[in-house]
Length: 67
Image (cartoon, rainbow, N blue to C red; front, side, top):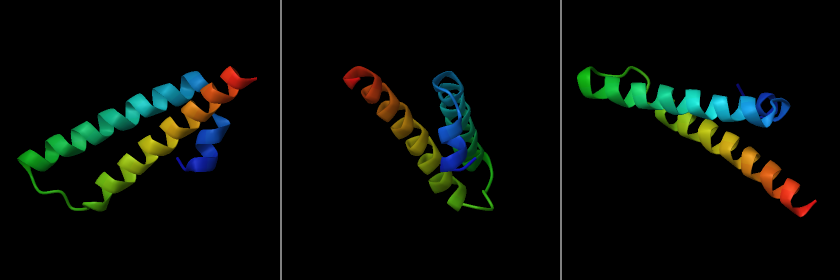
């Protein structure tokens, strides 16, 4: 899911997406401790997607407060 796809989601779905991405990141870190990971770039990609989703959420909440 990219940035434009995230902007189409409502706040509740966006929060669920953040939760799902965090679980996926946790599982990836857990797998790293037990076996080698083939693609280390997944860590950066997941962190970036979480940050994008959280930024979008905070922008929406700030917009609602100001309006």
